[in-house]
Picture (spheres, rainbow, N blue to C red):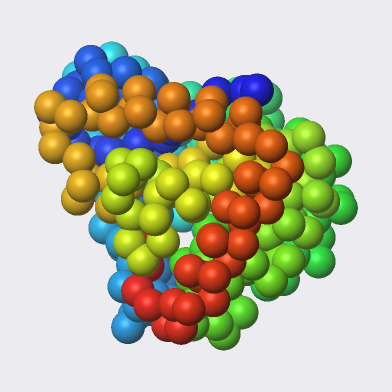
Length: 265
């Protein structure tokens, strides 16, 4: 069993230092903003982002190099890449990719200087996964919010029960795979975190995000114990029998099927 990498979205150095001292080792410094407000208008999503101008200060203050989520491919991507690498990013992740050619271009721009990953969140990229699986990417993350919007859906978690995510997981092969987000094991709305983690374990996920629900549910001085409880629960999930896995899958499917157009976590 591989540990589940928990990646905290954080751009505030003070909060990042507090999280780091309590055991969080992976951070995303998010600067994605291009087109996001228009794309996610009228959806209950998190669209705040910082500036690349703040990255070097974050790195110097916190003493850790984060993953940096940049904007989707545009006419200043090369400049964004250079600034992110110069600012101290240890890895880059790109949202809203649509074609194999886009990914090839991003790989050529970055080269071997830092690893790069992509977010699978457009309906177009779903047809490209066999080619994507053979590319030298550091990770792929399924962005459920934008995948729902791109596909014209209204239930954030529907792709996790209708076969879409299982198909993505199968097709990306050995690439590090992530999806959804975690919070306290005894919290989570509209899907209980314990059931969400159970399905991540079933899928063989390598990482997940700590973001809005985590910040809502977890006080700054509780981060360490919460991270530890998630880790313990993750170990327990990998000790389940096949019948227990089926039971948890059925419970997860029933919750998601009953959501309708519930807001996101």
